[in-house]
Image 1 (spheres, rainbow, N blue to C red):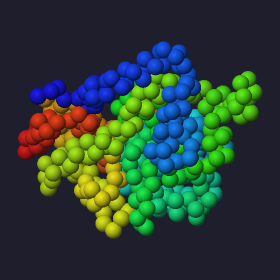
Image 2: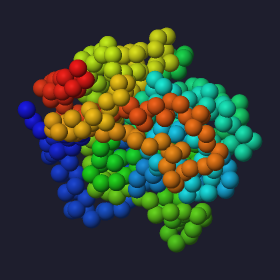
Image 3: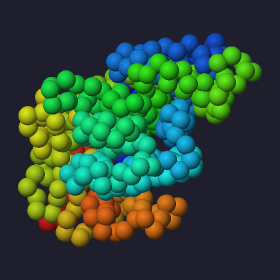
Image 4: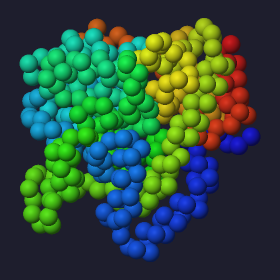
Length: 387
């Protein structure tokens, strides 16, 4: 059996090696390292894939979030609602811009931001909602858009973990994650479903004026060299990373399907175990899946995350590592409990789901190169331990 990796980037590279190598050689041969033709080419390819008017590449996913908020004109003290159970980058940029982060609890089935909790958190100072499409599953965007319309709020999608996912509205129409709100952002960190070989990110919008502003912000506020029209930052996707991404983008749907197939194997094996809760897909269609189905693509399984309900999560974590099976706990500490983001506004009673998740979640290997032998070994190791 091949060595099990949490993310097998080397195995994936071998499948596209010639094209990746040629793309990197093209950059070296032309010496167009910044804003070269491959950046423009990737941008256009991604706009077509997402069916969005504007893709603005940038240096990383965290920058993408910050630049999106800068471009929307949010001001110091404005309240921004986001999920308590996610990676810190989401709340980090809110704090860096001197906005006021408002953390709320998440849905117990999808781990995405809880709709009722959003409603309760809205005040006259609320200006935006940042739904995070956690672990690859799209948040309940139809409900979020309805709230945003009622309260005149901006919607900024943190799509760092769900690029390639589709959201199905109740009328049956579909839209790519990250293109539904006022603006969406993503990360191309190497382990992402669409990852480069360094850092990278992008911002998506259908708003022409906002796109113009964002293009200036990413490049020191310049539209013409040495003329600074807006306050900007230095955040550009380099040509090497763009070349890698341009090669990988045509494979993204296959990558997502490979992850779904691995998740289906996991789910089928763990089904009905009394100490395991498997991931639940929540479709907006006529039925809520509860399984990995073929009629909706709401989850691209950036992570495959179980809940272990018998109190043995930490022991399982150690046992898997000792058995040669990498695994991770995303996330061991809720954001409202992190030293950097503690606030007297937060009460533990307001975060029952998040506080339970940090004690029960564990993520198993999930990537495009998992084979049946590896999946069988992983699942049987988990089941044998829990038995």
